[in-house]
Image (cartoon, rainbow, N blue to C red; front, side, top):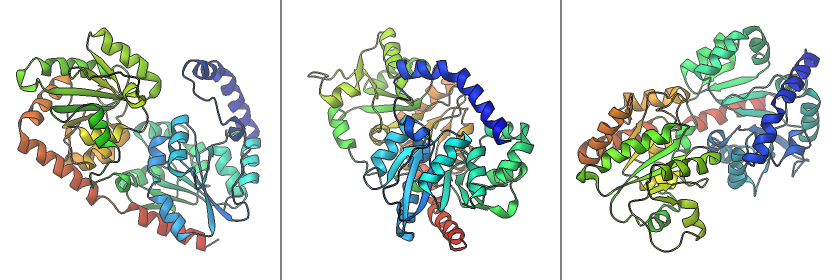
Amino acid sequence: MRVLLDFIYIILAILLLPKVIYRIIRHKRYRTGWSQRFGKIKRKHPEKKCIWIHAVSVGEVNATKTLIPELENRFSDYEIIISTTTDTGFARANKLFGEKFTVFYFPLDLSLLIRRAFDGIQPSVCLLMELEVWPNFTQTAHRRNIPVVVVNGRISDKGFAAYKKIKPFATRMFKKLSLILAQTDEYANRFIEIGMPAQKIVVTGSLKYETAQTDGVIEGAEELGEQLELSQGRLWVAGGTGNDEEELIIEVYEKLKQDERFCDLRLAIVPRKPERFDEVARLIEQRELPLIRYSKLKDGTAGPGIDKQAVILGDTMGDLRKFYKLATVIFVGRSLVAMGGSDMMEAAALGTPTIFGPHTFNFRQTVEALIRGGGAIRVKDTKQLLETLQRCLTDRSFAQKIAQNGRRVIIKNQGATKKSVEHIEKLLTQL
């Protein structure tokens, strides 16, 4: 089985190589960390026992912000290391944890490379954030009696459908896991349906509720407001936007600006993927709208004066929460188009009226909680988006109610960190 799997991986790698090379050259991705991807990983404190946490990208890394300090507090005799898959995930993990912990790229799931990584790391337990279960990884851990725990576990609609198509293979892989700490009962049932024993599943809630800042204190937001000269006027932030969505947002914005009630309204667009920054800048210019690229303000190359009619392009990493803090109203992107949505939890937690489109299958539990609690608004198309924005910008009591309810929903659903660490501790005491 291992030989067959490695053969399939190699064939796929050959087929994908042109795409990878293109991204290396065109988007400057995948340029670093190849020795780690090939399993050469060194720990800072190899004399200690080790907790290996894997978080695929930025969202999963952010979900560890409360988990890792609690693990460090409970297990001071263990070294914590963090792996990621994407460049943005690595950058985020390095920013949050790089000074204290080893941060590295997750090895490719070829059996030789995975064994090399395990030989170098010698983990006592592996924690996989949300899912990201790889067959050679789980097989190697299982053979070495190293427990693997899925933390903040979830299976998206798309992932669930895919696993059901390969259920015998998925069942064999999932049975090698030691424990799944699922976000919801629905996700727990999905894990059971694809073959995970029910006694190995515990519902703990979502860690992302823990990391959402509900106190409203966002470092750097005030400076951003000064740079954009936002002391007067209102700001609509469209955050985490995706392909073909920015054009729809701009169309709605242009309609709003035709109404004198919204003459002071400004728009900030923050695309989810950095490789799309230039594309979105070109789109704004093609619509003959003035443009402010925040990156130029941030590095001081923008020159004097701000055009307060310009569309603001948030073309930097790590600043979305600052934009959200300054917003009068927020639209959470990748939801007007069928991309599954971006994380709406951060927006709602800040106590700002939050809107998203119909395509939010990647965040179903959060969406259901917010809608049920009256803490966000779901629109079906640009017509409803325009109408909802108009109401949020003119009906202050309505907007405040949505905002307050959103924050309340987030606070109500917190508590997953403590539950998760308790179950991890119970597992480690049995080793």
